[in-house]
Length: 117
Image 1 (spheres, rainbow, N blue to C red):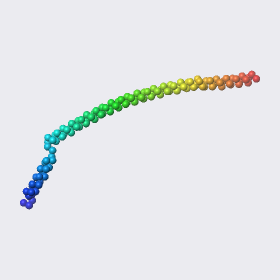
Image 2: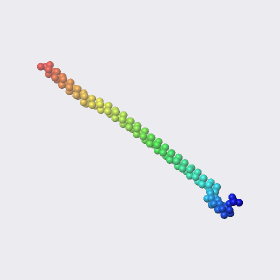
Image 3: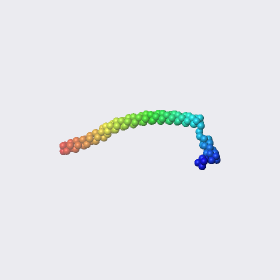
Image 4: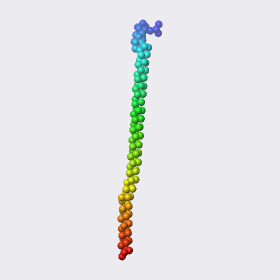
C-alpha cells in the first residue's frame, strides 16, 4: 500500500486534470476556428491575386509608355542625324566653296599680274 497514492493526492491529481480539461478546446470550437482561418486565407489569396493583377496591368502600361518613349527618342535621333547631314552640306556650300573661290581668284590674280609684267 505504500506505492498507492492517498485520497488527498488523488484529489489533487483529479483537480489538475479537471483544470487541464477546462483549458482544452472543444471539437466545435476547433472546427469554427479552422473555418475562420480558411476564410481568412481565402480572402488573403484573393487580395494577393488582385494586387498581382494590378501590378501586371501597371507594368504593362509602363512597358507600353517606355516603348513609346524609346520610339520617339529614336525618331528624334534620326531627325537630328538628318539635320546634321544637311548642316554639313550647308557648311560646304556656305563656307568651303566661297573660300576655295577666293583662293582660286587670288591665285589667278597673282598669276595674271606676274604674266602681264
